[in-house]
Image 1 (cartoon, rainbow, N blue to C red):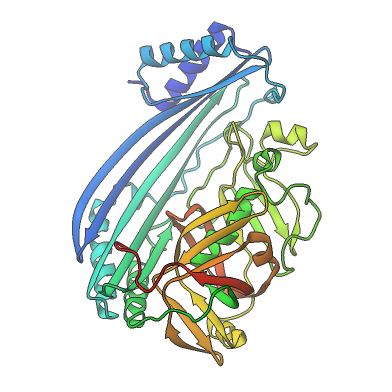
Image 2: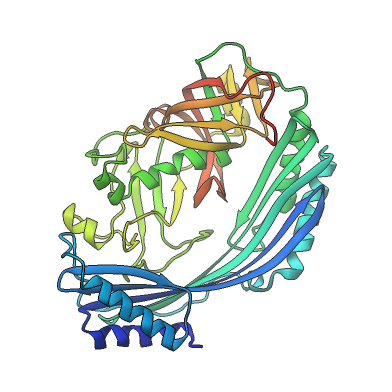
Length: 453
């Protein structure tokens, strides 16, 4: 069994021997520890270690990418031989762009929290802390999961680029219940054990489950309301702008941002930045999958679309420069930051006068990617605001809108921001509370919520 750097060097050597013009070997190694809990007790703990390689080959304008999870010498050699043979039967790729002739060296600079490398002893304490806080806030039972992981990326290219880096993250999701239809959600995620707040997540979940008792449905269909979105909800919807900013999505026509560079796409208050590596980043990367350095890329500034996210191929076609966001197939964001405002939560509730507070959501689905039309279902803490005060818990609603209309209708953003990542937010996002005007609200279901909700 070879180590990642030895494996990459061996794989590049095999590709050169076969006659490849270019080769990239990327090895990713992850070590994840997880605890699941239900009825306020831990039910499952496990430790998963995984290793996988992505192989990129190019020859005479033909390109191919494949992945393998077997790092043994003979297996890797056979895999690359089969991949090369398959590539030579492909037509030439009109979008092919050669790698830069001059390679780069990225020296490993360990900056991740090493406490998360051996988190077994921490997980049980963190879960207990979250459950205790939820119950103290009023919850009768809780369920959720806690994950802590460390991932390293090791790269070598035939043009001389060599590098490795490591990132770490810890993520808690907790749902609390006071009865069948009264639930709350809390989450905390961090790149360090020190920045992790399980008690805060538990307290939020417990408090919302208590406040959601005797929730009622809104009257009428298709009304518009101002909505105040928590960082959990806002990161799900506003962070999508980073996905739509991928030059691949723009080329494919599955983005509402087509042909909008330099045009206003949001309120002046909205700013969105992609960050490769920085303080708090959960998915930190020093280099992308083509060996280009990652960076801070301003996607939206003052409401104006400033840049798409590029790899080398899309950059050439758009007459731009790589932003260090490869994906060998498609570029995408690493970590998103939504700019902060100057308001507090209390000020935003008062400013809203009459509207809805959304603390969590699920089932965000797009009806039309080209126009950005979506719907999402708020849950686990939704409240009606009247006369600038939270008055009543609400259940059974759906928000239907477009991303561009919502970003263009941002009125206020909070000073405080939180990192968010969970199953509705793939890209870690630093996000404030966001007040948006005129969101369309409809019923998500009839008089009773669906079973198992």
